[in-house]
Structure formats: structure tokens, C-alpha cells
Image 1 (spheres, rainbow, N blue to C red):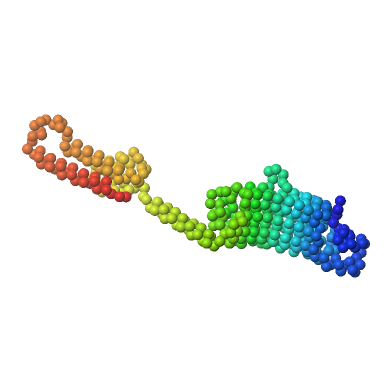
Image 2: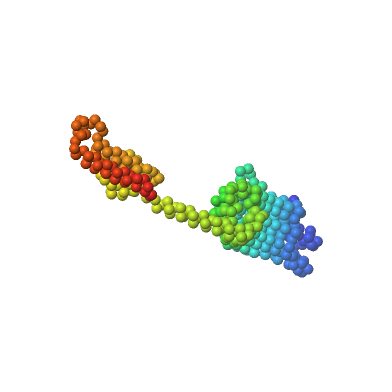
Length: 362
């Protein structure tokens, strides 16, 4: 078991002899220490290292550390590298007010917590956590609220994440790495990145969403300053073209919708027109409307034509009965010629009316 302590550091790094008190030479040397490279030292625990008050960068990656403790005493830490350890919980970091970069990739974390007071944290690298089957990395809501105003770089690749929705609050994000996850919904991605006005780089490769139709175009349209998407540049020419195309499509849809809304219902057209027709035609149209209350507008001319034709036929039968209906002597009556002429004129007039209705456009 190797425990990181003041004595361990003095002995292994600076070859000082362990002592209960520091002499002046040791004190001066320790106060000058700003960086400690302790990676690959088989360290499995962190003890008291409070003597290194000016320590700002600590490298502890590739060790066997399972519990984070005693780091809050080193208040000047700005960078901590803890990749490839056995850490299961983020703790003992809340008092590190100057912490700006935290590397926790390849550990055993399932929940991002314990960062509620780190108001200067700009980069969080928490990729490739070793998770249980069916488990995905989650974020504590209080951590998200705290990081909303400071976090600029986030790496959450390889954590079985299905959605980016919970990250909407991170409005200062400039770079997001979320490769090798389970993200599949384009709409979900677009709605989220729309909140990130400062986003310049995003990588979603090895997610199902990248194979969706128009994925790249939709994401570019939803962002504001994106310059690199999935390793490919996003230039201003592409962005402007997509925006103009989107505006054109929306305007065209609005025009078509407006034109469609102007088409009056068929029944109201028939009713308004039928008021100016002879009684026999109005009755025929009324019967048609009763049988079919909401016919298609495209059948307007045909229905009117059929109605007029039916009315003309009825008028013909009433004005000029079929042969044999009256005695033969009736057909030889002297005044029959004037009646015939009157009928022919009426028939001609109504036939002309029928032709006009056929040519009408509504």
C-alpha cells in the first residue's frame, strides 16, 4: 500500500529525511513546489499533503486511488489529473476555489457530483467511465447550475449517454466531446445546442444520430458560432447557404398555407350562388347539398353543371310532354307552334346558362 503524504513526498521526491517539523531549508523548498508528477507510482490513497501550500498542478493518473480525500487542504490547486484510477465518487474538491481543469477519465463514476462550489472550473474531462451494464453517466442538478456560468470544455465520451437534454444549462460551453455514446435523436441535439451560444466545436461521432437524414445541416442551423462538427470545418459560406435555404422554405410554406386558408367551403359557395338562380335550379342544388354536405371544392363546376342539366331536363318534361301523352288531335292544335317556339327559347336560354356554369372558375 502506497499512501501519498507529506513524508512520502519529501522522501521520494526531494530526498528529505522524515521529521516531525520542517527546518528552514525544507520549508523554502516545499513552498517553491507548484507541480507534482506522481503518475504511475502505485498510489492507492491520498493522505495529508497540506505542507505543499503553493501546489497548483497535481499529476496522479495511472494509480490505484479509490477515494478522493485530503485534497481540499491544498487550496491553490488549479489542475488535477486523476485519469485511470479506481475512483467511484467525486469528493473533497469543493473548497478548491481556483480549480480550473479536472481530469477524471477512465474511473468508476456514474454520477457527476461534489462540484457545487467550484465556480472557476472551465474544463471537465470525465470520459470512458467503467459502468455497470445498462448504466449511464448522470449529472447532479446542483452541479449543473454551478457549472452553467463557468464550464467551457466538457468531455463525456464513452459513457452510454442517450440524451444531451440535461446539459442545456451549460450555456458557456465552447467545446463538447460526446463520441461513442447512445445519442440518436436529432431534434434533441438541435434543441440542446440552440442554448449554447458560444459553442464552437462538437464531436458526436460513433453515435446513431450522425447517420440520421439531414443531421449535419440541422445541427449547423441550430447553432450560432459552430466552427468544427465531427472533425469537419463549418465555414461561413455553408452556414449562410443553409440559413437562406431554410428561410426560403419557411416563406414558401407560409404562402401555401395562406392560399389554402383562403379557399371557402364548398357548401357556402353553392349557397351564395344558388340565390341568383331560378327556383327549380335552387331546389336541385339544395337536394345535392343534403346528400353531400361537404364535397370537395374541385367538384364545384361539375355539380353545378349536373344540377343545371337536371333542371333543364325537368323543365323540358314539364313544358313539352312526351309524345303519346295527349291525344293526336292535341298535337295538331293551331296554337301549338307558338308554344313550341316558347319552349325552344326557354331551352336555349337554360342550355346557355348551363354552359356558363361549366366554364365558371371558383
